[in-house]
Length: 221
Image 1 (cartoon, rainbow, N blue to C red):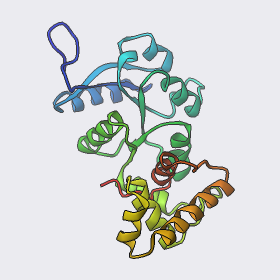
Image 2: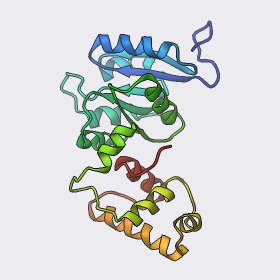
Image 3: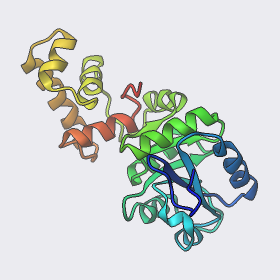
Image 4: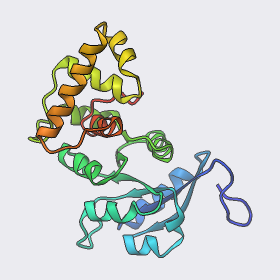
């Protein structure tokens, strides 16, 4: 939604989309047109075309993984992350490996093209606020992933990670789990160690939140 001079109105999230299929871009424009607070300011078939056009000023970029131009998805995501943009992958490819590869490259969300407009709008708002997002279906896919770099967490470790990654202090995590603060800390320490062993950074609370989202542990509701 823009004012008469073309500038976004306050509290409007500006969006752009990159996809090599024109019918997808036209469909996105139609879908998002009636969603309050969202303004599609540009579409393009490639990263270069997006960055050379009005879509370069968007806050959130919807990116298809396979642009058919020989570019690699991780490289495309990293190029778009310059400035303060957030990237949501909007793709038909929804395997655990592709989702996690995109999140590792810096995408903060992953929405399958089979999702509805409400799910897409929710992901866009989460990205604009600095939060991560994957659809509930993809969260289940990630949760059941057994890739070598996905550490196996015990039920208690996974519960501690979920609670801690939402922003709770350790004392609150302990109280919610019915354990001592020291025990809760041990769970989180073990989670960090397991992620370090598979080469994934989990040294800070923000890192742990990213890992929880990437692996489907975080209850995004």
